[in-house]
Image 1: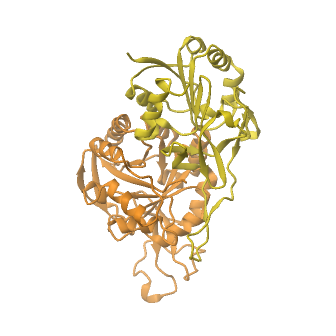
Image 2: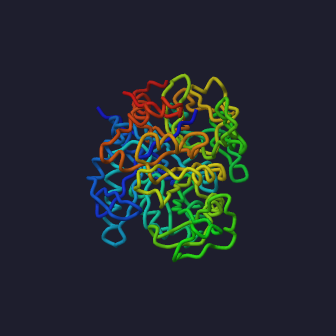
Image 3: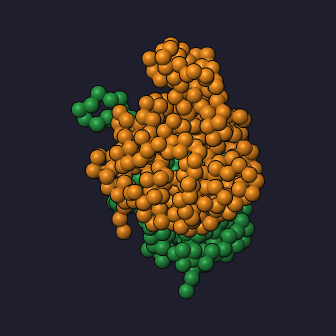
Length: 210
Length: 281
């Protein structure tokens, strides 16, 4: 029997690929931007691309933010993807400092500009500058699989108890996935991560994360 | 660690995959949806679709192709070609593209990059830059007999090759220095650069390594190398330290015509010490 998933459209980017990926793993997807639909759901997925800013402020302090808090309080299964995961935390340094929902401890910070990957040993080549955004496929630990990431900010200061997988870029090791009870967040885009991503979404739907 | 990406690119004209030499002389390479689906199943790290039609009907067909391809794949999709206005970006993102590449439109109107980056986020804006190497100015024997564009001011240094930006499918010179324009594009809010050598495009002689390396080192955003891949060795060169040092390698014909598969390319690169995402079940 397909599980009904409420896909939260808060205006933070395109939801088409998340919807397709959820359908692919057997979910019956209902898109909404209505707080009451969120509050009444059993499973909510909250994708987000882009940046903290006025739009996220409006979500955090508005009816959608209240609906997300109420949904999580009553024990519904919640998945935040990328910006949707970062919004679970206290806030971000982005755009002069912006608040998050404050459901998890930690804050989004920008990757340092000056990270360098050392040159191959025995060469006189300069070290390779690490680019921002962190864009592409990176492996996560201890899962070992590769997932597709696109982000310039990462979550810092999370409670280690909540961090299930980590990823490393340059000098920074950051949470790739977080889990606290019924709340799951992933920094990567499972909908863009081919088989590994679909497997991740299936596990979430089946409650394998609780 | 972050892996270098392998990106098969599909040039689309009138709903079909085509491949040309030096941006011209096209031949048919098949159905884009079937090709994209196969690449996705084979572990392509990203798929790129470029619209090379110039007609209104062609543009509309391309948006349909984007929609159908986006429907079938579970990896990032970059699309471009003929993007001039904010509404073009919106239409392509709406059709399911993850990133939109802006080429001539960015040169003609740099403000477009700034606007769409602010609106949709840098992560979905790629600035595509077509470059061509200029002949050395002070070497008379190498001077072009009838240059269609004079060497612009500031290009006097002959010790290093100088490259200029060309637009509109390589038909127009801009007088813009390639490195300077790439830096500007990054400042305007591009999340990534797609750098194509017009001299090498379709030649199977390999990427233009000097300019790829220079730009990869000069900008703080990822660079995709493009133009000229004819062998797996060329992919290696484009990504290798001291080679192109690019973050991603784009190729078209070696994959379309079945010369190599994506898994073969990845195995080869891994053996040569390039960090790539392994392909496996």
